[in-house]
Length: 133
Image (tube, rainbow, N blue to C red; front, side, top):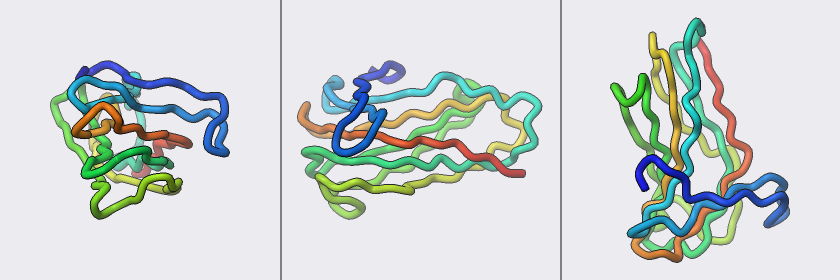
């Protein structure tokens, strides 16, 4: 589901509080999408998304962070591959992605598990969106 959510909230899991599990999407693709974030009247021209994640059974798969500015007029993605960027069963804190958003009116972010089967799971924790001029 491209614009839906395949997510479950856990009060506590893997020694963390308030974690979201992304899993069980169609054709190996699972998502967690934010609500639209208004950027009206803000002084920021750049944004940084910072988060933590924990991969479960991600073999030859990717975790992607997608963004949309102004309801999709500008889109982009950053993907991390399980072959090169991370191992399973380990927390990765302080992961980040920066994007330019001069004069944008809205932002939406989406975490996407790009897998090859239905066993690909990712836990997401501590998401922060930071802005600067």
